[in-house]
Amino acid sequence: MREDDEHKSIPVIIVSIRADPAFRLRAQELGVFRYLLKPFSPTVLRQEIELALGVNWEKYWSGTLARKS
Image (tube, rainbow, N blue to C red):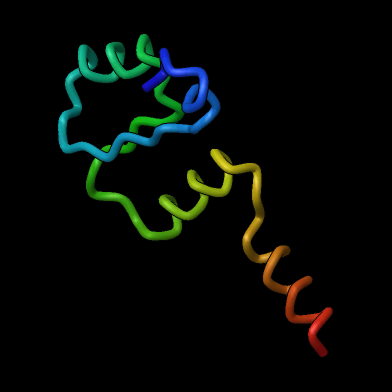
């Protein structure tokens, strides 16, 4: 996926139960944005997605709702 110009900019987040450093290292070598170990909270997942996409959903939705009012 990283070798395809069309997909290079897509941030990849791996969710895994494998804590072995070799898996994390391989993911890093492949250009993975984040390697999350299970279990994690929904809040952590949301924060990682926001970071990957450069979006703050709370600010986004509060601004969207304010414009509709």
